[in-house]
Length: 310
Figure 1: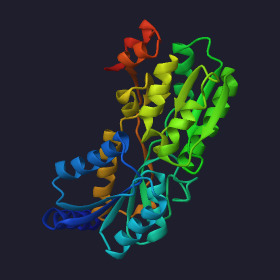
Figure 2: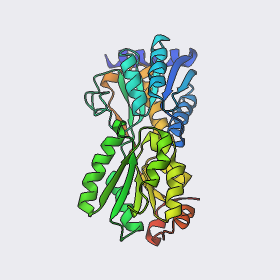
Figure 3: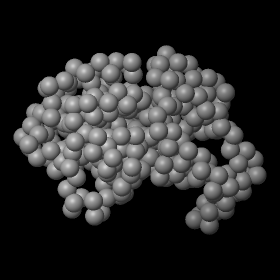
């Protein structure tokens, strides 16, 4: 039986090496982290010599457009859908229950209603989670600003992934004696005003992996630089753009990991039986130039093991 299964998998693999597969890619908004995940996915399939044709669609943060894109991909009967970020995954899952959906940059697919269980999804959805170490990220604030007592968090309460992270932040902040000042936005255009509303109310700012806010991160960076307060981010691409630091994952590598899973699905594995995967290692990433602009001294012991960006 095992030999037969191996032969079947080999046949599927050879077939996909010879015939191009049609992959629909749906993304909620453009920003470096999500783009990196998409590029990692495509690079992995290319590295494994999978001939794929991509239909890439970006909703630019518009939920109605997102639903339209998902419906079109389902109607086109693509071989597989790559859904990048939680709203994209929810739209794709709503549009089809038969086409395999590979998710990435989705914090908690169970809370988002995409799967029944992490080990055995039980739906046509599987992929990778970008659950980040929120508690360790908040601990960075105390390392950079020991006297900090009030931390601002800007997020979109309509994003399930962000709500999960904020709940984790509330628990961690209570244990650390930090008071959270929460500000919500519904669209990217509101991020600037949300950041300004924190004027004089916080000692530091934390931005989780919220797609709406990260798409307009420069507004938050400018606010923190003007007020000389540290900005801690939920992922490394935001540090490259101008946040001070994070302990987080690499979205490009997460995309490649998702690509590896996609190949297994294309070879015959069932999404409903394929466990959700997580990136095993997180890195401390520090932007020294950003720290200077925000008037923050970096403890020397942190630099020893950190990935440094300028």
